[in-house]
Length: 514
Image (cartoon, rainbow, N blue to C red):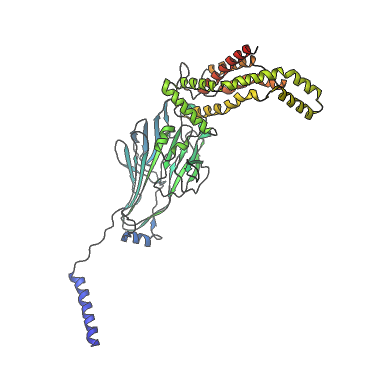
C-alpha cells in the first residue's frame, strides 16, 4: 500500500514537471516600469537593487572639459531674461528690468542651480518658457535637467531626473544643488553689496507666528527649512523646500565677479541606488527676483521674511503701508513722504508745545540753578537735592523738552529702514533732480537746506541747561548735516519738514510767551 502511494507521488511529480517544462507556455516576464515604485509594493527591480545596493557600481562623472560648445539658451519672461548654459545646465544670467536700471542678478562667473560637478550636458529642446538639458555620463545612464519659468516671473520650477536604462543596478553618489556665489544688484549699491549679501534659510519655530530667517555662515544640519538661498538688499534667489528630502544645508565662500568673497549655499541630496530600468526625479520650486514685500507675501512659503526691516520692523512696515496709502492718493512717493511728515507733525504738536513750555521754564530757572550749584559745590548730594526741590516747587521737568525728540527717534529709524529696504521706494522719483528717493541727493541741496533750518530753529529756541551741553547742542546742526549727506533723499525730506515745523512752532511760541 505504501509502495503504491510513493510510486503515485513520484509519477505525478514527473508528469507535472514534464508538462510545465515542455508543453505549458512560460509565465509572462514582469518588466519594471521606468521610474515606477508604488508605496507598499516591492518590484523585482527594487528587490534586485536592494540586494545589490552595497555592491552597485557608483556613477562617475568625467572631469574633462567638453570639446563641444553651445550658444546660451535665452528665455524672456515678464520683466526678466534668463540665460542658461547648456554645458553645465545652470543659470548663468538673469537680466531684470528694475525701476532704476536693468540689473544682472547673477554675478559674472556664478552658475545658479548647478549640480553634478564635472558632468557635461547638451541641449535637449526648449520652448517659450522652458529649456531641457541632458547628459549621458555612461552607457545606459541618462541625467536630465528641465527649467520651467513662470511667464509672470513668479515661482519657477527645476526638475532633475536620473534614469538607469542599463542591465545592472547603479549608485548615484551624494550630490548638491548650488546657489551662488553671491547675488548682484544695481550699480549704486555695488560698493555696499559685499557687506550685506548673505546665504540664509527660514525655519518655523514653535510658538512663533511667522518663519524665522537664519543667516547661514557654516554648514547646518537643519532639515525642516522652508526655503534657502542667497539675497542682498533688494533681490533674492531661493529654493523652496516643500516636497524635497531635506538633509541639511552647506555653506561656502567663493570669489564672485567683483573679486570678493561671496556666499554660496549648497542643498545636499543623499545617495540613491537605481535598479535596472528605474529612475529618480527631484522637482523643486525656486524664486529669483526683487524682494517686493506684497508680491512675496502673495507667493507664500515665508519668502516675505527675506525683507529685513531691522529692530523697528513693525513700525517700518507700518510706515511703508502709510506711504503706500498716500502714494495711492497722489501717485508720487515724494508727495506721500511730505504728507506723512505733516500728519506726524500734527500728531506730536501737543507734545512740542509742552516741550517748548518746559524749555522756557527751565530757562527762567537757570539763575536760581546756578546759585544752588555755586552754594553747594562742595556737597554734590545736597546740591542735587536742592535742585530737585526747586524743580518740584516750580513744576519743572528737565526731560520735558526731550519728549518730542524721543518720540521722533523710532519714527526716524522706521522710515530709514523702510526707505532703504522697501522695493516699492527703490528708484521712486519725486521732482526735478530727485530721481530716486531711496538714494542720496546728488547735489546735497536737501541736507544743506535742512542744516540751515536747524540752525535757525536752534537760534529761536530757549537754551537752558549746563553751558557745556548748550555748546554741544549748537554743533548738532553741523553734525546732522554731515550725517544726512549720504542718507536717502526721502529721509532728508522727512527731517526737513520736521525742522520747518519746529522752526514755525518756535517762532509762534516765542511770540506767545514773550
